[in-house]
Image (cartoon, rainbow, N blue to C red):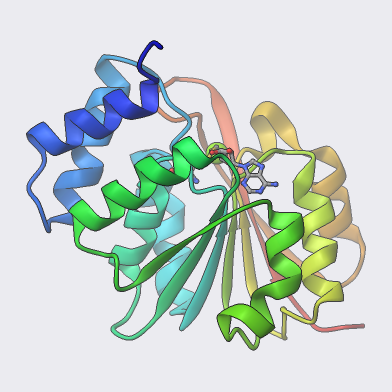
Length: 217
Ligand code: SAM
Ligand code: MG
């Protein structure tokens, strides 16, 4: 069987990055995906301009990511977390989850990041019982776009959000997630801010949306 692109990304990291250096790992993934093969990582521009600022402002103790892919954004988020904080990241594709676990381990952030293999629909309702989550401080939504609104409502139903919980959603302009944007902007439960940016490794407009939960009003 042909080798998958994600496997080639992993091999590039193993051959070129410095073990235990998360910055070197993400820099090498950016280099590979900018010059060799495009991939759906969040990318350095969005991290530098927005994610970094939003995570540092919120200083989460417990964070959730929906859509791990190769572990690129998980490594970037882990780098921003304070000591003792943890990131749970959900990935339903077993090949991607296997690559992500190796990249996370190579970057040396395996004690901060736990990859949960399965679909968000199955795992979110078990976060409290199985993964000792009370409420989430920060959630990065970057999985399939039809799931953003469904999983936001699921997080609410499962009482995983509290006043001040921050949702950060990628790709709200490209490919665009109008149902999610309409929900968070107009349901009355969130304060929203839009952060214009570009699709990773391309000169194409995109944006992230920050939605800060105001409570169950
Ligand atoms: N956040 C990653 C990064 O920036 O490095 C990129 C994530 S990629 C855009 C989307 C990933 O979400 C894919 O690996 C896909 O398999 C996964 N995914 C999509 N829908 C999912 C779901 N409902 N539950 C879990 N994983 C999902
Ligand atoms: Mg994305």
